[in-house]
Image (cartoon, rainbow, N blue to C red):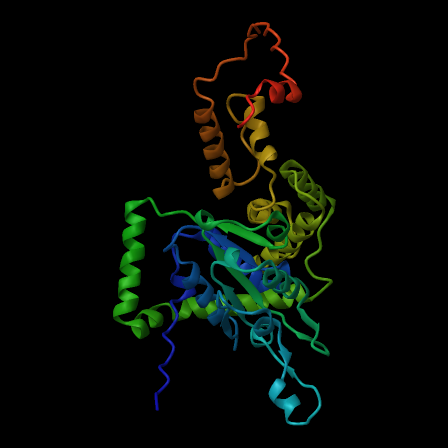
Length: 362
């Protein structure tokens, strides 16, 4: 008989440093899980899993559920309870991981390697808060309101644009290049590994404040009459989405809901254009059309200053323009090339002539 090992203590969310965009996106998704989840892109070792586990601890009584890479659709959405049915009883629904994640965080590592059918079910439930199962003679639905956190390494492939668009927010993590910042993060991690209880005690007050702020922000978002906004907010959202060349209106809706969640987190009395600007990059990063990114650079040799806050998306745009310039280095304009007239070939000998000319076998 084996004894179950206790789960390791999670790293405090308040102690996560060096990734401000990741912290904001996760907190906004926790304030309003209906945003559709957060997709985290980035290299290995950038605190993706650590941040997702830490977020679950901020939510009161929230479970942290991990979807294995080889999971089946039945284990995710639920299926028929065969043992109950074979025992001669009526059909019974056996809940899946979506039911277990209700009220908590559902974490999917390497989500780009999952089959599309599983990703579709994940995103449907994350956006609607309801899991609907109609298969194997079962028609069942149950609440499935959770914070979806998916991670992927772009070097190992990406998701189809149709699936990317259904994620509410996206964050592209970077490697820490500042030496002092790297040292501070490493020291904090080593201190946590050496004494988890003591490290968590030093951040207990900050953790409690974050948890209380989440409760207040969630209550503000749930109040339909709270956090009004005017035409200026609508105009800012529309202008940003048009500039990014997004398809459809999902980006507009997610940006408004994200701005509302941020206003609730800030304790504001109304949604402002500043809230829109602060969430725009996370909403548009995975929806922006490539031509919308490269168009300003093609129009002028030096990009004009943008009204949007500088972030990972702007860094990617600059890198893309530089790489494009390097690929075109040494290119020459096309020139006309003379064409030499080709003499017609002699007609082929008919088959019958060949047969006549061939010597007869003895």
